[in-house]
Image (tube, rainbow, N blue to C red; front, top):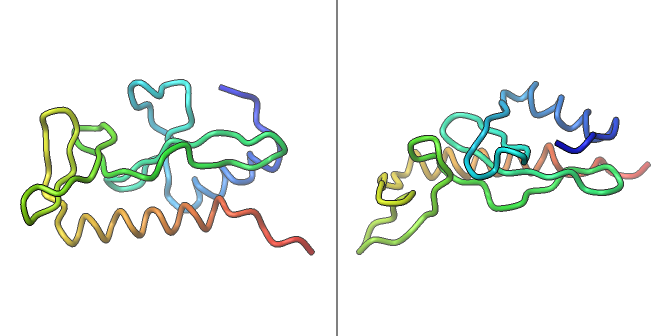
Length: 111
């Protein structure tokens, strides 16, 4: 993993304080993967001090990042051949995860 700046370490500390935990997700073992509940995101250090999303946050299916697809009139989260219904509760959890992560990763306003 890349050495993090003090500013990046502060962001990581804020993520931990908010309940996010680092996990390893194949094939992203060398990236910074953060999980909270049943959702996860792959992050990367930004030259100059920040941290950014490498891909949109995803719902975890069997511990792996899924994609949300429309299946007939329903939505599902899919990883390989496994799928999980994208229930309103799961969609709400993913949106809450996305919002909270964005707030923490957003750089503080310049003073």
